[in-house]
Amino acid sequence: VVGRASASAAAGALAASNAVSDIGGKPLAHTLTGQCGSPWKESIKDPGCAGKHCSLGACRYVRRRCPQLSGLFNYLALPYCSMPALPQLALLLLLLWVVILSVWLALAADTFLCPCLSVVSRFCQMSDAVAGLTFLAFGNGSPDIFSMIAAAIASPRGAEMSLGEVMGSSLFVALIVMGLIAITTPFTLPSHDFVRDVAFFLASLLWLFYILLDSSIGWFESLSFVGVYVAYIAVVVSGAFTRRDKAVLAEAQQERSKERGLLGVDSGTERHRERPPPARPEAAWGALWRYVNPMDVGEEGVKGEPSSFAQMLLMGVRAPAYVMMRLSNPLVDSSKENHGWCKPAALCHVTLCPVLIAWCVLLHGFPGISPALTYIVYASALILGCCLACVVHLTSRSLTPPAYLHAFAFAGFFVSVAWIYALAAELVHVLQAIGHILGISSTLLGLTVLAFANSVGDLVANLAMCRAGMPAMAAAACIGAPLLNLLLGLGSATLLGNWLVREPFPINLNMQLYTGMCFLMFGLVAMLVYAVANKFQAGTWFGVMLLLVYAAFLFTCLGMEMWGGSSLLTANIGPELKYLNSGGV
Image (cartoon, rainbow, N blue to C red):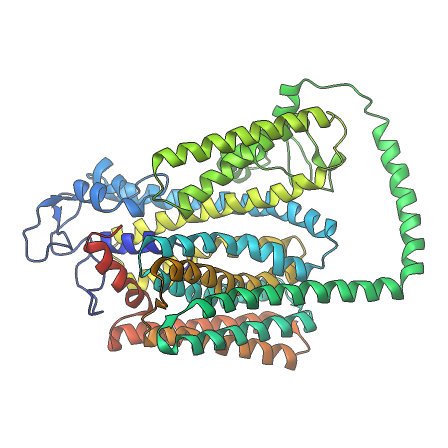
């Protein structure tokens, strides 16, 4: 099941591999290690030239026909072009790069996303569940919306891939990620919010099922998806404010007295803190170096050398990403003095933030954009960043955080999401390349490796929230992000598709897609029944049940692939391959 990768990139990746399906849906026997002998020394058969002799060399083939498998680098070029005599070493280097990217993903989620999201939720006075359904769900799901819109622009069949993405990612996040959260951090589900979210999700799936009976999505259906999501968010936010107002009215006097006492103590402490280090201004470069130095900060604020070789190795792996993220990602941490304010670093943040977000959106959301437009976007982002830096420089002080410090927390949240998405997308490219090198079939690759890789951003971010003591927020995001993709993502993509083709957007369905929808609905119902029966306690058995439902889905899809023809992946790829092979972009 293809999750986060864009439709055009996924279709191109499978077209580049010989492990694809023909238009009739039956898997072809060719793989990268197939009929042309060893791919390291011999040539590879062009899947678009059936019956011709294998004329293209492996390196030429990879460079010309497999650009969609490359992210920052063309990973297939490493074993086929750079190290053809040492394929095992090339594969080992790719696996090492997977480990490094995974460490960087955890760093982005633990060190940057969690503190910023905590500050943002407290500033907006949101509960953990509401913050998970809004900010965290939007952070996890917004890259998918860009992918779906890009898919609709890329080809007339892009919406079919978008629907496959929605089903694949929804199944993985709602079942696997939610199950792992319950197993690692047992918690109590908020009863009212959980029932409401699952009910909206089930109703949305039933509405989608009804719409797809005629194999097309029209203007009204596309608008209905967006409208339902807007109504859902309105219900969530209004309910949260209503409950908060009732609680405040019930305990207003008691809370005021407690807060006055606490604020009196805290303010005295802060006055005492601000006096000892009087304004001994530190040089800008020195303050910036202390801010980004990876050896100068620890989990408990401990400074100095790592205590073991393993910690030293981990710190060395994290150091490059840590420095880049500290320079580009505003980090507001209420547990640190002055909330971690550093003016030289803040100037770097506001300068680089627009450029980083523009790079992430252009590289992964609109990969086919023209170079001229790319330069214009980057130049505009850099000019905007420089203007913001001038404003911050003129309106802030070196030792005192500005009044608009919370704006940095919001910016830090979005930049953290951009980093997580960029790293997760790069991890997808590496795992795709490894799968093709090892000759893994498209079905098995989609159902296992890509299902994990494309949802690793959700997995890392949500588990990081659990470790930070906010499992309710993470669990809410496991429902909110798939719902965002289903309603707002698919609705926006098909709405754009209807505008482009001026008629109802066609979507060819298959039994595997319906199977995925049925398993997702069954998993949601089982989740709801189990929660109600156990007084909304989400523990180990709750998580095991969800993992078993997903395992049953995997075995069912593999069985249908082996005995029933096309899979959920290949059936949605087929029309895209036909379009690409006919010369489409």
